[in-house]
Length: 205
Image 1: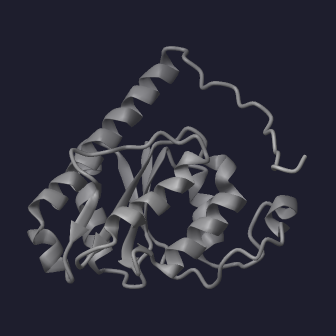
Image 2: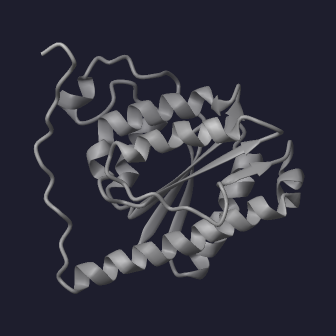
């Protein structure tokens, strides 16, 4: 079993990485393979061109297409971002918009957790934003004993947020437990539910 942890910070080894590394430790302790993927290099947002619908990948060939390939073997994911203006970083937003549109079918029913790191405020609205992505792909949400946010302006300060770091460890433990439960269910012959064909409507027809 494998979990991909997406670091949506432009800083590869900053606060968000520090938080995700704490989640990763618990996953590894439980025998789950992991990879922290730097998603803070997305070059542009989704253009709505639907190139990916016809060609199976995004027209902009950057870290999004690289991440999409990894999803084929992933059993769960963790989304991590710094807070910029009470929201996810611009790079993380661009990354998730394009990844979930171009490769979202690879994520159905895979557990997902979200992590937000901030200096002081804006983490609640950022988590709300991040969790919209797994909710629209039927992904079980992995929670902790408190909202999965950390406070600090540097990696060392993040480590001093003891309650936040505990939440990271709890995510790792809970994610590992859920993945093992899913695996046990598959071995027992419990299949995932069939997906209905999507019904698309708007409010004028």
